[in-house]
Length: 256
Image (cartoon, rainbow, N blue to C red; front, side, top):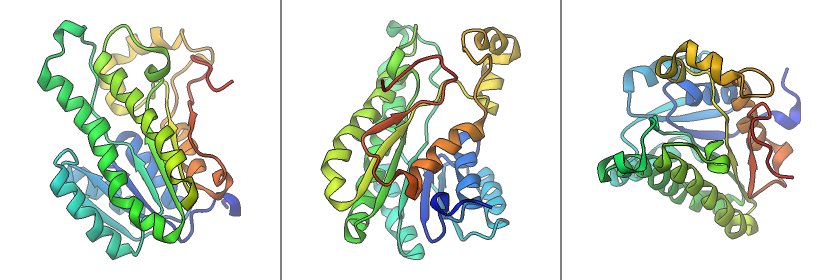
């Protein structure tokens, strides 16, 4: 039984990159806590599986299959789904791509644009599409997904680090701009998470070595990151805006 202050009953959450990994975990937890869902991903087949799991929890779920870097298509579909649900109360901008370890001289324009389009451009225009409705209702939660690398940097992947830092800038600006309408903007910046993508790309040998750098001695579980986003979406965080939560096991200490 979810305590009342954490309940998302009556809320509608839109989650990008929801087909698998962290996006799927956000969808499942918010569905468990009572939210109806608009789920976005480019992979329609996998997204349909996630949507069915959420419907099995008793939720109304619509699937928005599109490439959210195609801004005209993406932003045209959002109002259609918003009308179907009657509102969007929560936006979790989760969609992203693998950063890969690349030296600065190996990051060409195509690689840079692919990263900034999915991480920064799509995040901005998703918020732009839902904010007018939030203003009318004088309520909303904008939750951006950043990364631990936005705070501590990395030895490679500067395009990823830059994009993850950029979405923190949105949070700061939106928090001040939208506060008069009771719209909160915050970010979750995970450390390395044990998703299927992480395991497949790093391998367990590399992961075990990496875990030694984390004071708690392990990677985060997907559910632990989803808890942070769901808390920000709840009434318990109604007076919290412009802030960053970083579930990282002590690898980087922030906010104090």
